[in-house]
Amino acid sequence: MWSTTCTCRRFSALLATGLLFAGAAQADQADQAAQVHAEKAWIRVLPADLPAGGYVTLHNTGDTAIALTGASSARYGHVMLHQSTTEGGMGRMSMVEQLAIPAHGSVSLAPGGYHLMLMQATKAVSAGETVPVTLDFADGSHLPVDFLARPANAVDAGDTAPASMDPAMPMDHGGAMPHGH
Image (cartoon, rainbow, N blue to C red; front, top):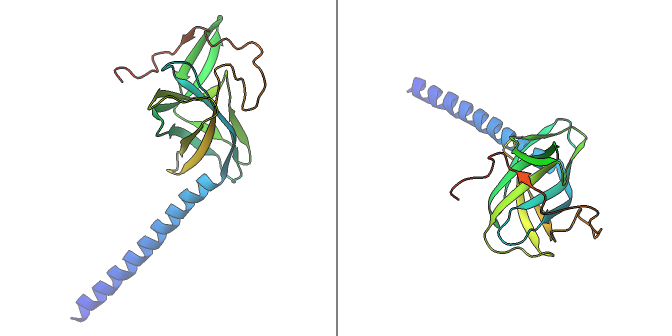
């Protein structure tokens, strides 16, 4: 009987220690999302069922780099992290697995660079609406951010008029668009 009681006590102590460490790891994950602050979040809404671009500036107040790995929104069927580049006068878009936000630094997702590609709106999105988007990080944490829907000719989160944005510019999506969805 002594052996069974002793074994049960050891097991209970090990279990309690394991739960303590698991709780601490979970708290660290939640803290990392809390270290990222988003500002100037907006979506350029295009006509019909064309994909929308999502832009935001992310600030990391933590001591370690944090990797943005994706996003989701109940208002869109697919949200992917993309990078736009220009080669030989042709715009190209490619999918990106992750984007590092440096410790005590920031990253801007902006037209002509890194951005979120929001595809297959569940219902039409109009300029002026707020669209909830959840940003996903490599550590498993998530950050909900409200994005302001802006018209197709918008160039930033404010009310500035477009200078030379041509929404009809040819784009090569590099096969990054999902097929059959």
